[in-house]
Image 1 (cartoon, one colour):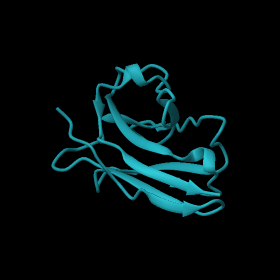
Image 2 (cartoon, helix red, strand yellow):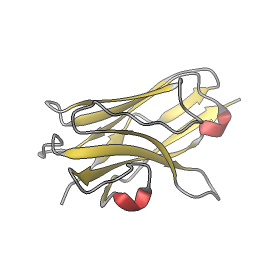
Image 3 (cartoon, helix red, strand yellow):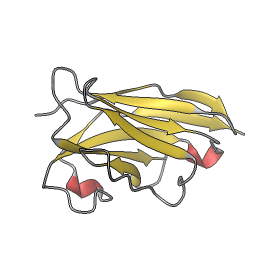
Length: 126
């Protein structure tokens, strides 16, 4: 079992920046591919970004490409999502997720990830 804990959400004005973090207390993440997803009220959970275990592959949703950056620090057992040029439509609960090496295929599908955090709210005001 992998426990994931998100932090760093909050309220920010449009055009601002925010960084959310995902930590795995007491557990190495170096053998997991990681993903960030988000879910707005009344909408389905959607893919935001993912990062392979080496950090060498970082797919993004088209809606955040060029604005968001995913990164990881395996020594700190933490994955980050830096969000710049935020828009009101980025408002959602952001979840991080983990999938063991070799198990996730595209890293873009929520169903590929067996482990999830509790989520952190990001609200962007216009």
